[in-house]
Length: 159
Image 1 (cartoon, one colour):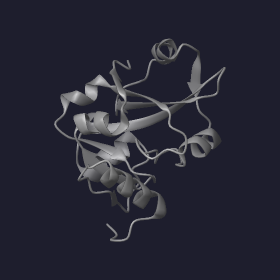
Image 2 (cartoon, rainbow, N blue to C red):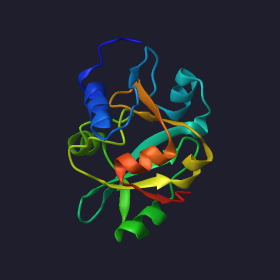
Image 3 (cartoon, rainbow, N blue to C red):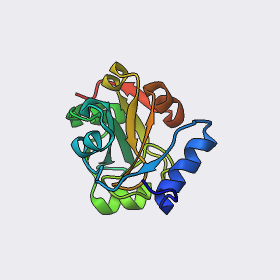
Image 4 (cartoon, rainbow, N blue to C red):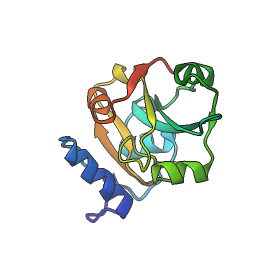
């Protein structure tokens, strides 16, 4: 773990602090790009990983962020219904241009363009969860309640 954070990870750390959260962003030598890799890196269950998946609405081209428990597959029809138009997985360029982060490191906070955010209710089965912090090697620990507080996301069943 390095003492000085990369630019993207520091941006997330600063945002968490600005929201009043006492979370520590850590950058690890191993990849945290996938939920499985992140769980192995921090020593928790895959279900405790809050993976950030970005969708794009097909008509208005808006970003939609779904923060799901690691093993859960997101039902795109459910998300489409909630945003009142079809959605599809966002391309890597769309993700970077709208969030400021690359796939595998999308943090739940500090996006270039504020997405509509949905949070998987299954994350509330855990006392603490881990989320990406701006790079595919950076994560931070928080509670599900903190995730809702810092994002303003709506808690739903994503499956």
